[in-house]
Image (cartoon, rainbow, N blue to C red; front, side):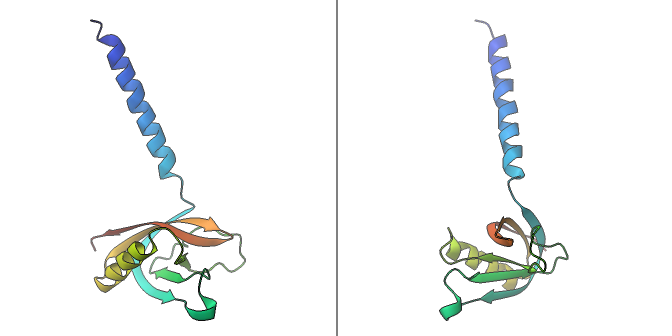
Length: 122
């Protein structure tokens, strides 16, 4: 039994795994970290897809690059977005416990839509 082809194949698959992991890591338009300075929720006539939940971080880094002349300092999530309730509860818990939050966002029409949230110590 020849072991060499197995090692080559194993190395190939490891290389492919690292390649695809690095592609995913760069899939975000913006990544910013900080404590939650403010959370806004929009309801009524202004809500339902009008940046329903807006999150401001203490970071001086903008949430993501924007082509808007005066881009907002917040990232948003709409109630119709996937896992809205889960992300909302994580953000509220992080604010109550004064935890550091990292928000990965994607630019949608110049605004930063929350795609992934990480809460860490501190």
